[in-house]
Image (tube, rainbow, N blue to C red; front, side, top):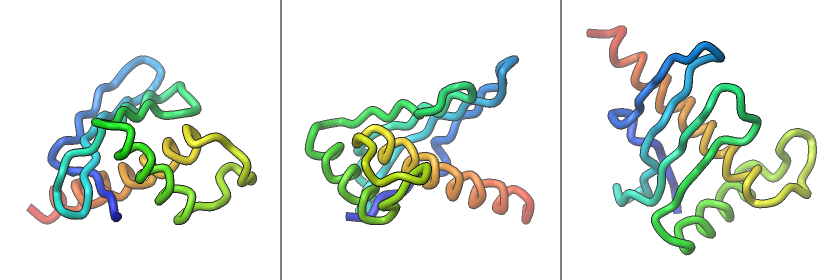
Length: 103
């Protein structure tokens, strides 16, 4: 199952420690399965899922796509989930910003 971030759902909030972002995680068929809350000063992003099955599917895909995170492959699911969600968020941010620059 492929996942993505809904670029239109991204919300940025500037704090004195950096820029935080929140966004909705979707499946390839457009179903909402979770939300990422990327806080600038946290090492691991908070990712909330709508159900345990969605979390398990996301973790499995994260481990498959990026088997090594921070130089290791033996992290818990939370690290893989966080890093994969951050990668998806960065891709969605790029798409959002490129759309704004062409307008």
